Image (cartoon, rainbow, N blue to C red):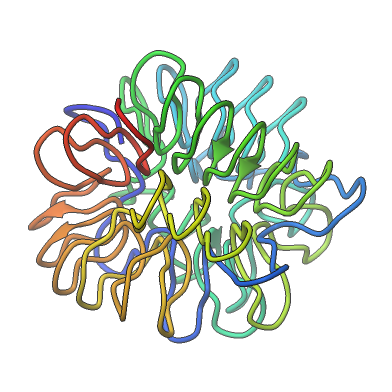
Length: 338
């Protein structure tokens, strides 16, 4: 999301954004499938190393980056892809919850074909290595961050990545909502209350879950967002998938039938129904949404990641829609009003 130069969740080429391919579930999940989640005091990501959650420092920016890069990462209280200080989400340093981890635990994702938002198998998303598309990682990892042309969550300078303006970081939303949207203090994919990360309720941070579940992260091959089987990505409750929210609000979040950035076609990323779960959408339209091959935040054409039109990356959408998409002044994943 963000404005002007904000690349949002986007990326180029094969960047799927929040989503993935095949049966990759990315953001969403059904029933008790909670993204990063789990229950109890499971603490997420965080940690050090060159792969920091979605963001942090070094060449693997994942969700974030440095300077004023909000949303995907950044520094200070920037919550989302990662970063430093209290940055929560993709990982980072200090009290960064979500994503992160040590060693091969990569904020957005992990290694091999099980990445970030997803769970096991071909679930792509949150990050990882190789051609893993989503929250960040190395090589051609696009979506939340990465290198070279990998835009999305972060970047440098005033690239707001996931965020927008004021304290709305990440996909957007309302008030202090950070991440894919939602309401209240929901950080990350959305959700209610202080849910941070993929969604969920309560203090769930990171991929989702309930209670004090933080991040996906952890150590070893613990993949953020992850889960098991078909329970993948941000999670949430009921039919709220991806960024989450309540009811059938999927993806960036919001209320009612607002799906991800929404849209139709084979747009993948945020999630939705069909084989590509995650943020929301219908049929094969997963993720931020958009039409045609739009993967990620939304937009038309080959827009991957955040979306937009043509090669446009970032929040995508139309009009003043920033971040995950939406309409009107909807920032980030969605939300209501502003």
